[in-house]
Image (cartoon, rainbow, N blue to C red):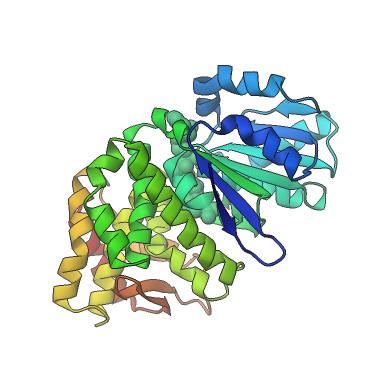
Length: 363
Ligand SMILES: NC(=O)c1ccc[n+]([C@@H]2O[C@H](COP(=O)([O-])OP(=O)(O)OC[C@H]3O[C@@H](n4cnc5c(N)ncnc54)[C@H](O)[C@@H]3O)[C@@H](O)[C@H]2O)c1
């Protein structure tokens, strides 16, 4: 089992990564002297798949432990689900000495982390990601929240977990479309990190889709290390952390415009294409560089489907993005792999151009 430190000031924690390590969950919690009153909140589909294993582990626990299963959908990443969690916590007489365990993908992690940030003015929680997307991205960094009134993640808080446990075995049952969704965030890191990682992803797309364990573990480790460094330097996203939003301003607009029929990571892949075209339009990226950087996206384009997008509606959704300042949409753009520009503004005309060109790749 590997241990990766996330050195956030006053909130340092470890990410444990390995194969078949789920049974370490309570041992690590005990070693860290975490609260003993546990509410485990698993994703319904994952729970149904792994019920025997989860129930078996629960039986080995000697303290107070209840389980509250929830459904993971963007529509249910909402106050409704939060309310159900709080009702259950109160019915079972949990107070401030609680440890919540988020056992699922990014939706579960975001909701449970947010619940932990406000229940009893804040309780401990741990992240046990079960999707590739959650393993490489959402389980680390402490961004938690819910969707509200057609805006993604608009209600939320920064709340770091006490630890993260990534069991790569959990990915065995993940459907292909969810692997592709995780690949979306991995592709984001390919553009943000360096040429070596970009080349590695470029030559391993098929291995990722086939869930080759060594490849998955390598990309999870690299992504977690990179994200850990970024968030350790800027926990609350006042500067450099914004880079992690590459492609996301477009992606969130697609998710809302398509009424959540497109998966987050799929939308991120298209969003990155739009960001590259916008970078080119604003003369940050010349035509030659643009074409070379599009290679990875072109390799995966056949995996992504999106229906017709209303550009005007998408731009108006982007105008509600929480990263905006003074009513201006702020983009993360690129001048090269690892050459990242944050808070770039653009005219509606240029954004529309980027939407048209980015989407044209996936037609
Ligand atoms: N907090 C952050 O920093 C951050 C970063 C990126 C994305 N996100 C958020 O993460 C969410 C997307 O996360 P996601 O892609 O993990 O989606 P998800 O939580 O919806 O999980 C995807 C699907 O996989 C199923 N599932 C989960 N684990 C499984 C397993 N092991 N085997 C089979 N099926 C399984 C779930 O039931 C669900 O249907 C979005 O809401 C996005 O906004 C948050």
